[in-house]
Image 1 (cartoon, rainbow, N blue to C red):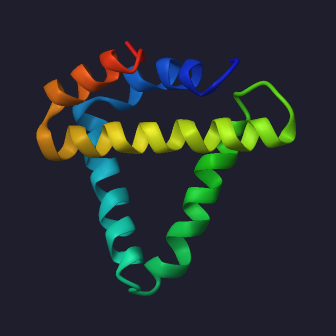
Image 2 (cartoon, rainbow, N blue to C red):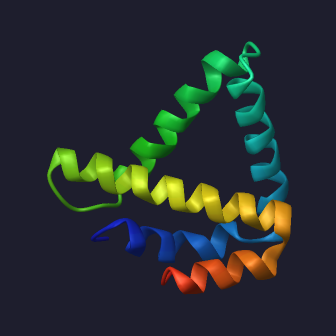
Image 3 (tube, rainbow, N blue to C red):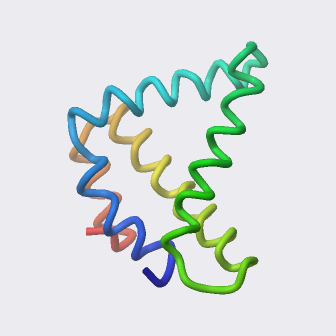
Length: 103
């Protein structure tokens, strides 16, 4: 894959599903607990996010600096779309995904 958008295009159909919604719901719950300073989430969730970024970087082409930036961009967009999907529903998330060129 070349960049963050190519990665999101490949991943979105697999993660924008009712089955994945439950998993990502738990992930975002843990994120909320982490941002409120609650342990063990405060310590654990940043490590999970780093793993998520490292995973994404493995699918992107470029220099080490570009890999990190593209992976962070992919994760920011994916997480935003998933959060929108969970809070507003699948249709708004799909509209947003189309608008940014994901589908």
